[in-house]
Image (cartoon, rainbow, N blue to C red; front, side, top):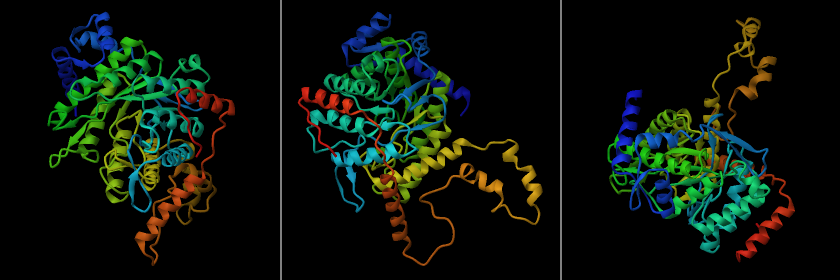
Amino acid sequence: MTNQDVLKIHQTTMRILEKKGMVFHLPAAVELAQKHGLRTDGQTVYFTEKQLMELIGQAPSSFSFRGTNPDRGVVVGRDGTHHIPGGGPQFFLEEGGLLRDAEMKDYVRLSRLFHAADEIAVMAGMVVQPSNVPVDDTLGHVMFQLLRTTDKPLQVMAGDERVTRILTDMVAIASGGPAELEKGPRMMVVANPLSPLKMDHVATYFLMEFARRNQAVIVAPCAMAGSTAPMTMAGAFVQTNAETLAGIALAQMVRPGAPVVYGFLTTAADMKNGSIACGAPEQALSAIWGGKLARFYDLPCRLGGGGLTDAYVAGIQSGYEAMMNLLTASQSGSSISFQSAGVLGSYNAMNMEKAVSDLEIIGMVKRLERGVTVDENTLAETIIEQVAPDGQYLTHPHTVKNCRKELFLPHLSYRGPMVRDDQWQAERRRVLDEVRRREEAYQAPDIPPSVVKELRDYLAKENITPSDY
């Protein structure tokens, strides 16, 4: 890939948005575009390159993203890749292999696991979709549990007007009120365009509402080359770029300087059956190209597929596909990595064993991201002079001082001699032991009882009665 290739993608994108435009299925978005001097035709908004780049130029290259506890936060666009666990699956795969509908107990269990994980900087608002609460009230139930479980920054799942209102009201309560919420993002939402070149009413609505409230929006097409995008990856990248930039431009029309993330998740459709191919190398290619384009536009980005896999169980396939996606996104400069831990079956299921496996991979990727420090201590010149050629370093004070901070120390990986045992069963025991270890590490954050009561009272007005878990 050359800079000239990136420029070609950009130039083709500009022609597409000027000739074909982007459809927004929300009259308020079209009206806003007209007020900004953009050409419209029905629900279609057209952008000239000058108009689009002026709007994109208003978006920040980085922004602070805080939890409901303001002391917990990250800077999106700096400090490497911040990981978010999986979100949205309908199913939960039990440790014994049974695939069933997810329930609230699974939601709480997974949320506690990820809150306790240092590898996870941002929590997923809908880590699974619980089947045992009323569909229309799901958001209220899960946000009540989440706001008691964690004080980390939140990636949330918005929806129609009622859902978005309940969501923003609840996070405002947990954050100290609406004024405190609007000081800077405490929530991040993913707005997925409906490829090709459309955004539906719901996604357009909550994109605009989040931008208005100074909350972060990831505009993230998930087009599939060969079905919802051109078969050639370059063509798919042009369309993805157009959809992402149009969404970001709309956010800036709502509120100049609104915090946004450039999303680039395009992959291939499986040509045998038409399904999405999350573990395909094309998913990793999109991360590489998306990183280049995000830097071209000077925007923070979400690249590739996190720890996504098409595998049905945590095993060999899920491991190599998750490592490919997580490592490529990190090395391509992804600011945010969503779907980073626990997901199986192309977005369909969450699983505890896959979660701890992915957390191990994230630890390895972060070690690679950290690189090598070169200074007087790490060069170890005097240590080499002391020990070589006849000594050893294992018991040297320099080794004791540096071993825990220099090396990645795995919890799951086997090292050392093999022993006479059933190797498959030994590995499975090791993974399940790690699940238990991480679950036992959970410590609830200090959420004031008054906040919990206020959340309950608020939900009662919406006729929602959450249970305790």
